Length: 362
Ligand SMILES: *Cc1c(COP(=O)(O)O)cnc(C)c1O
Image (cartoon, rainbow, N blue to C red):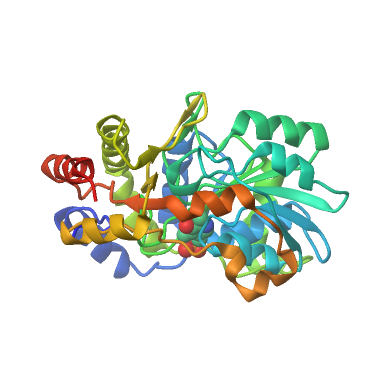
């Protein structure tokens, strides 16, 4: 069965010597390898204020702290995402406020978000679901008009672009995940990208107990408690080796995604999604709408291809009961939404065959 997600690890002749070196180097905690990885990643996303962390969830947590989110605040978000996006909001004691999606993309609808803004709104959580890029033009306008920061959850969207610029340097906060099945993995890890040195310095304190690494331990004074969210040299070494492959690997997702965009046009029972002007998705999954989804999934399985909705709409979790609201557009979208594999592991024959079986119908 061709899976929907699969970890990419570099060739062992590249990865294992580097790993062996660092494991026995006597320095496996946060050190030079971490800083080197940060610089390389910062180049890739074109933002010097990029901090490594031990997960994408840690990055979400710190972004919310930097945005000043606390008890009783509201964060506008989407139900169409992996749970960490919204669980992190709950961890801050804030309320998740669901906004509806755009029927043609499945991504947050700026017009509905506008309706949900109140005096308590502290941030907009903008998820670039499945590697598609949200309507940043509209959201940047909203953010400026109401003076509310945007936190971009780009865990699915490494390598995606907006007006030619990689995600990571656009809004006040952007987070990435380097968890097992994302475009690039360090086994576990994450990045938080911010827009200035002050925020980066605060984030650096928050990721390591509140201690200032630039000062000797005995001269340190913790003023705000921080977490243990930093990356270590071992994960960073994997990351550094991955950086040698990331353009090629992300490129494969994009090539496959563009292939399906073409090959599946005008297919009976399939409605392709749209992309906002100026956006270049990185197609972590290939997402589309299909008629009779259960039959579609069965037909794909019979042909050896995994297909599924993958994520449970987040408002189904009891922890979000207080946020219950009507989401009529999403309800319709979710009935038909399905993902098919689109990653680096697909061969040209695989993707041709996938398109052929879909075109045959179900
Ligand atoms: C994976 C993921 C995260 C969390 O990243 P971790 O590195 O697993 O903590 C956050 N948001 C989304 C949308 C994700 O898919």
